[in-house]
Image (cartoon, rainbow, N blue to C red; front, top):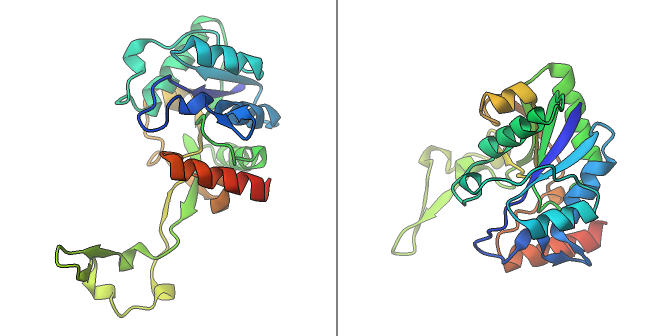
Length: 226
């Protein structure tokens, strides 16, 4: 069985209750739940949370919350893999048979189920441990600049100062949206990035929502594209 697990703890350092804050008429987490539910490759949607309030909202929008996450996995220092591995272990104890897990972050209102399915097909066909979406940097990072205290600029890679941007290697970054992984890969605490493959997606599908400006940008893009 393929499932989605949405990790949604109650704490949020920069936006209060970000995971359930109302975004264009619905709690933010509702978008992740609904997108996962529309995927043709996901059979059940689970929310891993330490909050009864988040749990109730998640169930209202169709997710399952078979257990509550422990406090030891709910601080802002805990990374994704241990949370997902713990959720899988809890579900196995409930006699679930799990083949693959798609971890979907709760603040992904622009994400399309088609992207989840497209990356799953590649992940499944290549028999990889993990697969996740990536976005191309908008400008070549090999021509990155730093600002000195004087205000003057200098290149991090001076040898590329006169190189045309089209002649430089293309680099990518994690879109921060979701990660397909085998149950065993999650349980073995393998590394999502270096033990997986990246698949490029449209940059407008991903907005990293950390502050008020990011939130407003996401609302604008949601209205514009969807």
